[in-house]
Picture 1 (spheres, rainbow, N blue to C red):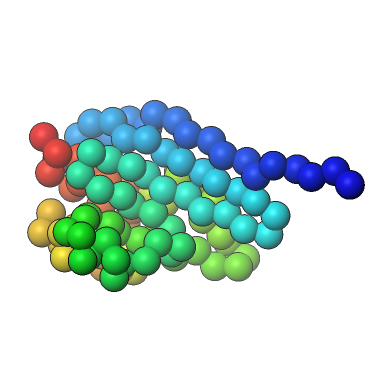
Picture 2 (picture 1 turned 30 degrees about the vertical axis):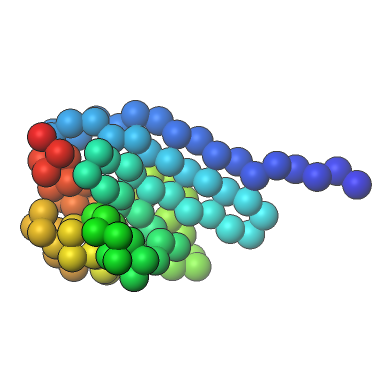
Length: 111
């Protein structure tokens, strides 16, 4: 029996307000992606908001679909934010804005 390992990649992403790390994780029949900034994370719908909110963390999530899953961090750029923690809201992040806009606000908050 041959067992394949899950696949993970990370890379530096440049934005107007600074740099972030883009992350993609894939495994058999699953995946998730995120953009990590110093102030918080913009990620796909796999992220829970309740626990990070309890810890005062800034998380904003986008949601893919079965026909268009979010697999690479760049997929988050034009995806719409569907939820965020109060800390992310304190940076000006709102439901309906793009993932790119949310990342820019997180980067601005870190400066």
